[in-house]
Amino acid sequence: MKDGSAFLNDNAQRIIDGMIGDAERLRIGVSRGSLGECLIDAGARAAGGVEAGLRMTEAAMGGLGSISVCMDRGSSKWPFTIEVRSSQPVLACLGSQYAGWNLSSQGYFAMGSGPARALARVEPLFETLSYRDTASSAVLILETAEPPPQAIVEKVGRATGLPTEKLTFLYAPTQSLAGGVQIVARALEVALHKTNDLKFPLENVVDGIGTAPIPAPHPDFLTAMGRTNDAIIYGGSVQLFVKGSAKDASELAERLPSRASRDHGHPFAEVFKRFKGDFYAIDPLLFSPAEVIVTAIETGDTFRAGERDLQMLERSLG
Image (tube, rainbow, N blue to C red):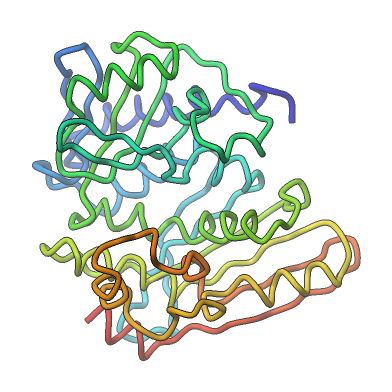
């Protein structure tokens, strides 16, 4: 892919403009910060909702994903699921949606996701991604209840090379409905991230689909975080379409599901407590969907591994 050919931030800006126009219907708050940055509250003080979460996900994926809510009759207690599709899954998920930008200042902390990352390119992940975005504005999604302070806005402006009035920060906490939806909508993204960790050639991933159930929001942060993670770890399903040999596709399918992790089999909130809140002490292999299908498009072979754990979902999601 040539640099700039997908225009992630331009795509996201069009989605943001639509959200602003639909602000009342989406129940989101739109304002300007002290440095002229656009602030969109999708679930902190604003009510937000499922639709706001879907739009957040579209922006987070730089406009390269199709996101919808569908009914899964196989899950009696949590039948409504998020379905995410992308025909440019590596760029949409790793180049944009992945929450890989650590933003902290004087007690404020948030992980940034979205296409502004492709302008800043401050993460090691971009050493493996050749894509470089070009844009006159940038969009960043934050999983937090508070808008970014001035120091963070200035940091993002410097990293992206844009004036602060050209930045949009779209935020919602994990405990909100919109925040929960946009996290669960990362089922495909976590599969791509683990695919990269497993050293499977990213250029061989040509298409992808992911689903995961929508959990009920919860006012307690740890409980809410546990539910959104478990929705993917124990209820997520992903299909990847890849180039290469049937053997490589088979090995990828076998290694991708969350069951390959030593921490599998326990609700995420319990795992998080066990490691005393140290996210990085948790086995990274846990962060992947429960069920994986990998299709080798050049040979016509399909391989399946893992399975959803409905009992664990009922235990975690309530």
